Amino acid sequence: MTLRLSALLALALLSHAAQAQVNALPPTRHILVYGDAQARAVPDRYKLAIQFEAVDADPAAARARVESQLGATIAKLKAAGVADREIVATSLQIDTRRRYDNQERQEVFVGTGVRRNLTARFDDKQALERFLGSVTTSKELSISNVSTELSSEAELRRQLRQKSIASSREKAEVIAQAYGAKLAGVYSVSDVAPQFQYGVREGSWPAMYAWNGDNRTLDRIEVTGSRLQYNAAAPSFQNGYVDFDDKIYTVFLLAD
Image 1 (cartoon, rainbow, N blue to C red):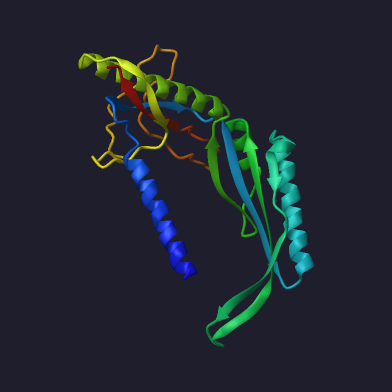
Image 2: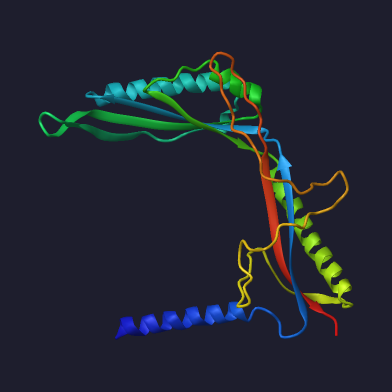
């Protein structure tokens, strides 16, 4: 009985939420628009992930090899100019390793596996290249990937939000003026695309509107980029682009 009552209450709440979504538009005259802004930036920071792993019947020996590799790698990172605060190592992870023996048709003990992971952030490409030129990978030391970051991302996203808000109002004013109406105020604002019974859904909004600011501001861009490429003989990375976008959905009321 309790389960049935809980299910009925859940259905009632879902129905109420769905009805609120459908009735999110005001009963008076209004304009529903979205504003967007996009920017392209060249990454200026690089994050490297390194894994250390050793397997041995003697757990102490496996641990010693991992710690030795970790210490040597940290020393090379510092020599490349990476600050202590930009180097983060995980705690020791230990587990039992087995493999399947086809002849005996069973798993056999291999040894004890010891692992540690490390991440490091480089402030410039040259420092990353210096480090990669000094390290040698093996079955006990592997580099998984190099990811790019933008140090000013928070400020960039703040600017994009301001521009998407401005573009939504600009678009609403253009539409209202074309129909001989005036904006009266804002009814609702959201950064999530609304869904209404008349068919407006996430992903179906047109992407033709671009922010037109002065040449010093961020303009609309298309998503493009390239992966970092590493040549062991001549370490060199080709910077790609990092793309950011922001959208805001606004319901403006129209003056009577």
